[in-house]
Image (cartoon, rainbow, N blue to C red; front, side):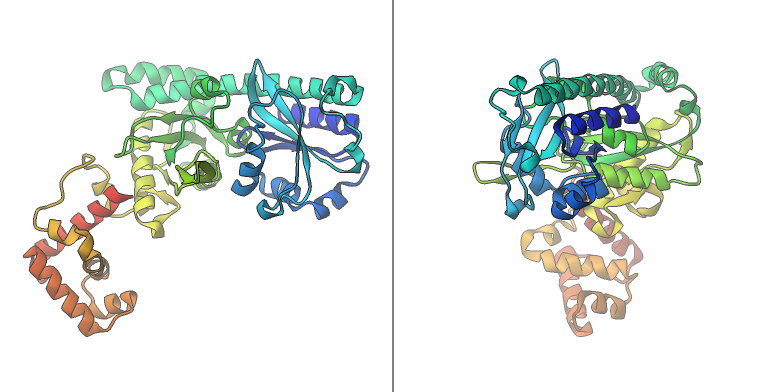
Amino acid sequence: MRGEYQQLVDEISAALGAPATLEDRDFALIAFGAHGGDDDLELTMDPVRTRSILQRRSTAAVRAWFEAFGIARAQTPLRIPPDPAAGVFKGRICLPVRHRGVVHGYVWLLDDEHLAGLDLAVPFADPRLAQAMETAARIGALLAAEARAGAELGELLRDLLTARPGGREAARGALREALGPAADGPLAVVAVAPWRMTGDGEGEGETERAGDGTGSALAAQSGVAAMCAVPGVLPDGSAALAALIRLRATASPAPARTAADRLLRSPRAGRRVASGPSESAYPGLAAAGVGTPRRGLTEAHVAWAEALGAARAAAAERRLGPVAEWAGIGPYRVLTGLAAGHAADPAVLPLLEGAHTELARTAEVYLDCAGQAGRAAAALGIHRQTLYYRLGRVEQLTGLDLDDGEGRLLLHMTLKAARLEQA
């Protein structure tokens, strides 16, 4: 299907006499066309197009600038002026790619002398623009069909991951039938958390049916067999994305890490952050986890729990991420299995108060360093005597003896659990 998109984009480039670029509604690159040998010049003169082609994605600042002009609601072509502050040095013409009232992507053209004569107010009066819009509609139909197929697989995956034990076998059988031979091959489950389930009002019904909000182009590039958003799985009630990734072998999880990295670049990864009167398109921090690779779907629900735990650990301990594998998160393998919102041990509660943040961090680093004062002092950038003073204060606040193994274990695990809850 990727070849069909390329052919259609080339048709638009030929009709308008200018290079066109096709992105899905999450600004992941699908195809780009050249015209008349000028593509190298255009790449040199326009860094946004260069970045989109080389990195397969636009930046958050570029997306915010384009979305501010209502491209997700547009029915006809739009002219968008340049914005050097966002890195957009040349204006654009945007052809919305729609199907049955839902936007599925955008065709972009540089608004230069080649297109100066286009009258966008009456797009179908110009035969060149009319032909381009007709081709964009064909692209929209293809993207819609691809999204429906992905939505069906996503719903089956979500059914499997959230099914109660009694209904798990039926859900597994349905997904196995839909995936075909790939269902019995080596697979990994990736979690991206948090994940926003809907966009900014554009085509929200379609987005909810798709269940993931991620463009089909990104899925295809990432080797995703199926993916879905799973609501309410994080301690604060937020959703996470689950993606089932095909592998060459269970001993080679690299494709899963690559997929996780690409999915983290989606504008739906993370939380929106307030910016003035409205939300900005810059996502808050997100992290990804990879469960232990397995063959087939029998333990997919276990792999999902591992992936979600690894994502939470990566968010809590940035040295583990932004992509963490279950096998590499150490004590968090135990801590992520604890019930959300569990109370901290009463002895450690005083240390978790905001006034004692520095003491808590000192104790955690000291315990991370296996109680080796020299290493801990160096990691904290303080004198060894300062370290001893702070550790004495920790013992006073908690009543724990840091020369006692069980006291150390209780303090260490409680501090890590608190970090996990706050991530």
